[in-house]
Length: 134
Image (cartoon, rainbow, N blue to C red):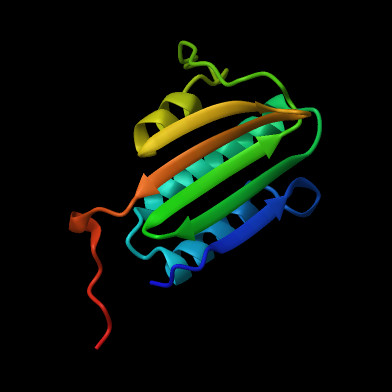
């Protein structure tokens, strides 16, 4: 794997949850075959869905990989930080944020001048090594 960073970006006017998942799946197959595809796609889906549902404005999803690290960042226009809440089995949500926290290797949340950023990070482990093509 090259030390040069690889990046894909999906912006709100040009994407939705399906577009974000598709871009993430393509990105992982090209640059992070070692990553747990299902876990990353669930995190992407939840971050995009939360931004669409709770943000009255723009959002931007960015996936980056460099030096055995995968970073999924969601920036949006809402200054409200995500919080865990009791699940509502009647359809009111409460399941997504705990999933993000459980599936990602590390999660950071921080304010931006006009919103916030959620960053989920995965490190490649020795057990996730994919054999090199011969």
